[in-house]
Length: 345
Image (cartoon, rainbow, N blue to C red; front, top):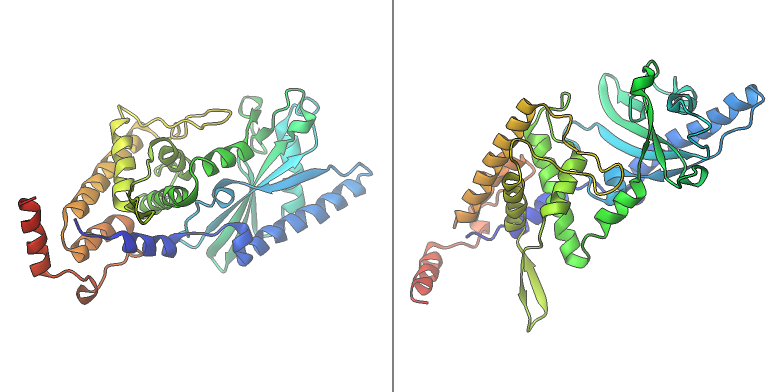
């Protein structure tokens, strides 16, 4: 088997999206929106001679977990939680609370939408999308009798049946995923998440629910990843094999498929993360996972790292490096000698 670990690690460096505290540009974009929310919310409520609602903001999603990938279309998706100090019992209509944020930010850019799970502020340069900020609106757990944080779900014109407060634990989710592994095992765990996310971006349409959502792939890795490494006990060092690690996850996903692949959020509301995918979309996911597994097995069976990387580039995209032949360090005579030695072992 060709050793392609350094090429996987180079691939990871090319696609990884840093956390907010590591990425000044994204941090500044997030803060622009939050500063606008603070100033406009204050002005709106003071004009009505009403108390200005208080709230806390926090990072959530892949930025908080450190599992984001650089988007292929340059449209960065920034996730922020806004937790108001209000009780869900005092505001039975969750859209009423979401409207505070929508009205404060509407007009800040050309397009601000209230989507069912969040309020989204879109930024673009000319006609090209640059990034958008998803603000998830919550009723803070400190204000609810059950001590649980609740997400406001619903659109501006939603019927009562399509509006709800849903128990949510974004901080707990980030903690569970973040504490799954430690040290270098954790680094491989995160790399495998990012590899699957980039495979998804490369192989699926972004329309509707055609692609598996990123948190679904993250939790699939959370469920089925095992560190893959060889340890030198004398030198106290470990050599990681990301190719075998992602192969193990993909194989487990297929083994657990059945008619559909079901992956459940490990915190409340324990929702099934791929439930919005149709049966046809789910069949397409299975077919693409089978093709991915076939490519990974082909790369594992290759002696030549150039050919192995060429195969991997087809499933992961052009950011996966293919070494020049002189840089591979592979020589036919050495390969033959190794095979001979193995045969007599």
